[in-house]
Length: 257
Image (cartoon, rainbow, N blue to C red; front, top):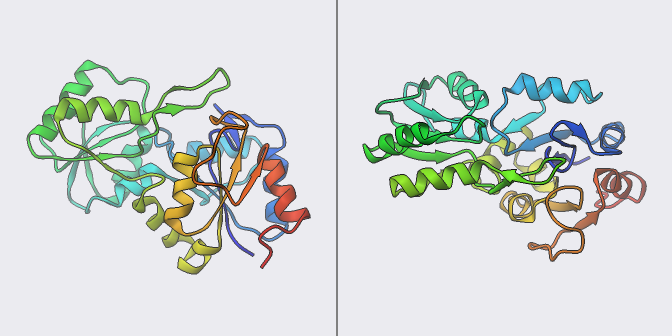
């Protein structure tokens, strides 16, 4: 059996409200022998908070959540110092890596992720550190973040402000870029990563990530992409939602090995 890599926002839930059928779909995929991992660009929350939110829906997830914060932390070496312009998930990942964390002053790197407290002072601190020589790392560059009431500004919008203010382009850690692919490979192995199916709602992120990883892409219409829109890269499978993907993989035998 091959791994199934699920995006969270727009695939499993919207602002932690489950998309109909997603909980049962994950249970069916696991019962069929697929390892389900949650591969998300959401870096704001601590890992155990995301695991607990999934558990509250009836989805066991301990050890199965991979975030762009984890991928960003791997771009720094233990003993380096990072200025964080992001949420607690970034702080946790950096600390676990052995990276010193600060919110002001000079640093080896500035790590930017989505957070609700971003303001002009935070922008000034981040830009100044980059201008003084810190590397600029973005957990992700998604312009928007899906919610039940429609999209809101995402981590990429915050990162764009820091890039503009500092005059430096960031290295991006999350989907669809290589650092997140390296993280997945480290967890499941190279061969399993190539056999995997990435389930996502944003082709520019999830679809391109599948191509970076060298695996199949299953597109769902339950997130940010309007149903019927042109999907590029073209998916290997398209369905209304995660339940439809589970039907295709478990019942219809898509991608059966």
